Length: 477
Ligand code: FRU
Image (cartoon, rainbow, N blue to C red):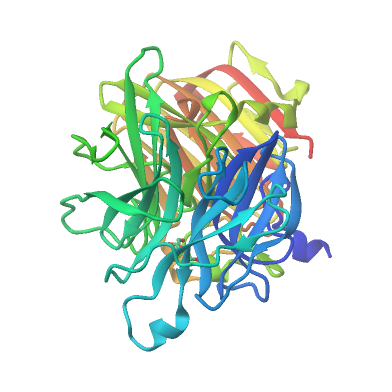
């Protein structure tokens, strides 16, 4: 049924049916990327969590797999990560895939205990096909903190130990282990946010080399629930700093966000990727309205996978999210829509659909462009060189009345500074728009629910910019 599937992403991961939230257990093994995810197989709203599972060779074409982890007597299976135990430190077998996740015990929660979140592990010796829970779960008890979850485990090559980050309500805790079973706390990371941001969730920590140098820094990622993010609802922050194998420290004073749009949450990165690439995937929704978006048989998609890169400029360190290299293979150029050299006074293109629009522009005064459809729905984008503000407006983009918070976050802005030159890449799928400025220095990801597909693209103030290079690409899927 076309109607039901209208918002089904063509080239973003979606569950075949029912509810999905966070990406979990991102790990590469034996030429295959695994994507596990928070999954409720019996409805299109959040419920007792399982880990769904999919695999891919290129992070873009996914094959659905059976559910990997089911709730058990210790609780629902909340978010977490996966590692490959090359040296069989846990005794589950050489190269066992080990999932480390949070147990959420709803019964304890009902009894008003605050001890209902603990950490458990499970393993697979057949590349994630079948799973066995560890018999002595949980491996880490609750220390008396109500929100204690989302373990990110990685092999610290400098220390030859497993390390685990945990979100502990309003700070991060770091643990260490030799065998994935016994964990000892080694440090905490806190901030003096005033006012404090919403509950800390889904942490990640990894090393990146500053592009064009040999300087190495560590990046800490924290997702925040509640009303935390710049344009409303839940969002994901990052900090660039140092990590001595025990404690993470940072001098960073201002908040920097992985994505300034409302719809990229709980994102984390892959373990064990080839060439040490740092690949990030986020959940393309927002807790403010995730359970009521107008899709009917399934809910939510993942963001496109993005490669994180570290750069250093006048504003300090910046984590870029760029489209993965392989994404271009999914697209083909639309030759008649290419423009180079002198920009015509009015330019529009009306064959847009599941497309990528990319251009470099010299900004004379400001940029203003619009996506629209035959129903008169619009999605507008703009940048003002004087104020340095970039915005998107989804206020008239179709179905916007399904939720007050969605409606409130119609107009979304980010400060990108005064720039002469901008490179803009807009990726449009059935119900999402991802905008990458300057190859991902700033990103805005938003969900949209137009009455019909956006097919028109128009520059609204052609005198405001000079286009140096213009390209429409179709996504082949
Ligand atoms: C983030 C989150 C996690 C938790 C999971 C439950 O979106 O709240 O903190 O583990 O979702 O589904």
